[in-house]
Image (cartoon, rainbow, N blue to C red; front, side, top):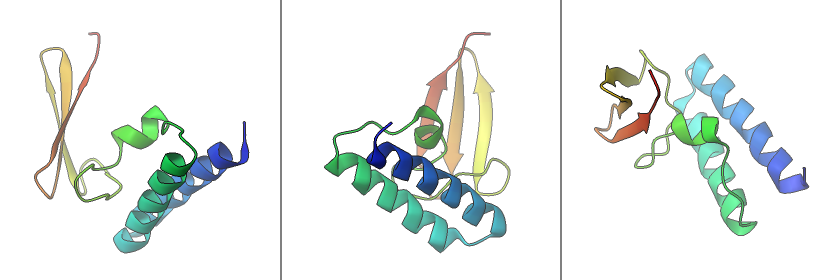
Length: 92
């Protein structure tokens, strides 16, 4: 794993911890920084990071706190407080 990937993983854990503490602005900063590091180094973000961040407002999503989770036929719908939707398939 190279330095940029390690940095993205560290920023993911920092964003998760900041969101858990209620520091949404700090968590948003970490998300934006991780996306910028990935873009500059031409890396894809880890799946867990992509699924728990809002593409529109860059907030770290916490189901039940700032995101609504609904299970539909064959997919999960995450809705951010800003109104953005994300759909992820699942086998079930």
